[in-house]
Image (cartoon, rainbow, N blue to C red; front, side, top):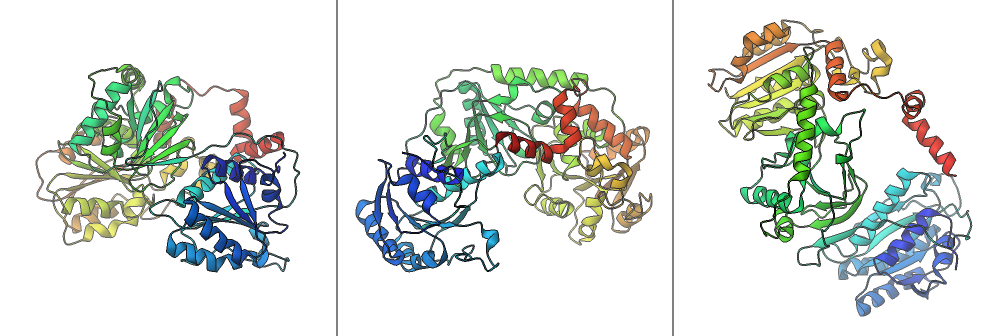
Length: 575
């Protein structure tokens, strides 16, 4: 037998096989020829023909109810899919797992008076639990997107109760049927509490923790024990809030530009937590995501399992508690971190320098809020006290609301609450410090360099424009253009104690007030004035601790052409 050359259809076929969906009710047409012609001679599929799509959907209901299996449907474009509505509505309310695969030409043709093109981008609420568009594949990005969506569509059939799911499968009705064997397709499985769990006997394991709320003592102990038994480490930034034994500041190791260490490659990465703003560069071969939401969230593009359960339940299952201890991976990471720290020279007066100076001096049991992105990056290079919790607004990942979030935190506790952010982020949210509920446990550090420093930072794609970045991309010159009086007067008029520093010498004279364990009678605002050149150089130093980036042909071509052109060339060469 032979298959279509359309890769998205190949992926659908192979994942139907993997997830054991073999019964398919097929209606005649042209747009679904790529799919139907590819499966009609397969010994795996059990295919039924039905001319009337309305009847086909009801047939699927009967097949699903009687067999107890998920059933697939396939129809052509135009109004054929509309006739599925009554049967799918029945399936929705009876909770029957039916996958409606409606074939379509590219949806950008909708609205251009092209025959047989109707808009299926919105599906009635009680016709399907979810709807997925499966586009044609032209590059690796498309392949990943298609694979994840097809897995998710199939898994949704039986997720939190059965029900119908819609898949809009794009075709260009071209290509050929000369493919004798479909290349491997990446499956994703969802594991729920009480299911059969996969074995975990691989060599290198890491636990990647994104932004995470405060851990329970039980979860910390389970993770520590897991690391000891499986020779694993915990990878994450300060917002992971993991306070166990087996994590080192990962950003300093993984973001070195000129040396790709073998220690950042793992056989399995167990992924917990939410969005990380650390941009850690690790290479997992397989990812196991653990989250009670059960969502197909493929951050590292190697997702294999989603464990829909609590983190405690997951680690409790895999921890054998046999007393065995192997810490060689952690020791290797810790050695690498210490080696890099020892290479840090005297830094210019900058966000990174301030982070290095203050990171290990924060009062015990205080709370730290970091602005995205420069402040978060800078502080992630260095260790902070084990009892300091750290947060950052990485959910929406905008500069708005950073002070307001820290303010809310300070109102809920009597602990010291620190907030570190840049000048644009401060002015964006400056109204927050005028709040009448303000408490004296809030301390704000503003790095004022007169613009969005992130866009001038070493390695940022906007930095290539130099001074031309200033006016519009980095938004320089607003808010007093580094005025020495503007924030000072504003803060003091609102009841803050104000301190400032223009140099390392100034900083050394006043910083102890900012981090003092003693409570001030006022909240404190510390304004630190830096410049682009020092900030950029400090970042370059931290990324190149192993020496300057090698001038390989690959790196030179990448800089000359850019990522988009490099990707376009790859697509051409593959074709």
